[in-house]
Amino acid sequence: MKQTERKHLAIIAAAKAEFIEHGFIAANMDRISQVAEVSKRTLYRHFDSKEALFISVLKIIQDSVNENVQYHFDPQTPLKTQLIEITRREVDILYHTYGISLSRIIVMEFIRQPELAKNLVKDLYSTSAIADWFKLAIEEKAIVDKDVALLTNIYMSLFQGLFFWPQVMELAPPCEGIQVEENINTVVDVFLNSFAITK
Image 1 (cartoon, one colour):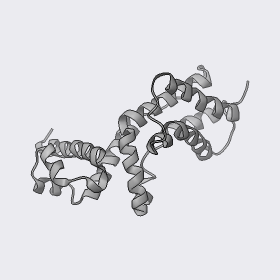
Image 2 (cartoon, rainbow, N blue to C red):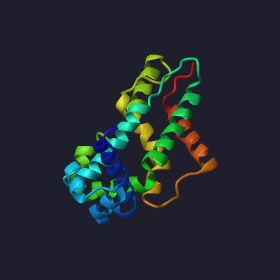
Image 3 (cartoon, one colour):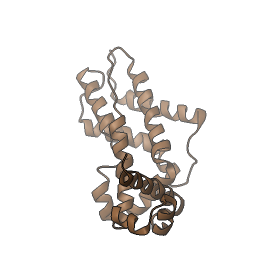
Image 4 (tube, helix red, strand yellow):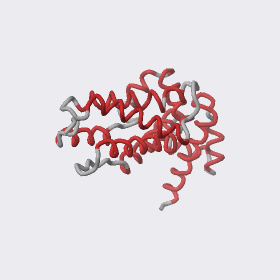
């Protein structure tokens, strides 16, 4: 890896930690450059503003998710078993790749800057892997033949209602242990009771 690439990654890592600890508004480019061990001039050569750096952090996280997450439909495996595993993976992505702290900052910044939300929301929290799985399940006549975007939105509404919004709004702590499994089963049962085809 070239030195320029190493510096770029160091800046991204330092910026993510800075945004999580201080939020977007209070995040400080001086601190980011110190933690990344680069000069402020080098920092601005890579990212010309704090907003550009924030956007890059989010896009890099999502690009990593998109590259590494795919859900394959298996006609031989029970539908509930597959969707439980998918939901468990989505919880892991939310809590350990993004983290609730960063998610809260993203939501707050989107409220503060609606234009930023318009430009980024289609790229963040990508649901393409889940949507692809629903499409395959429809083709295998395992779930009802409805619009894939509608099915994905319903699933994500159930998922976020238990794992995302209460935690982002600080109404509940991040789920742990048995609560994770109970909520996963709730999401899956409610969805499949509505859309699974009984054979």
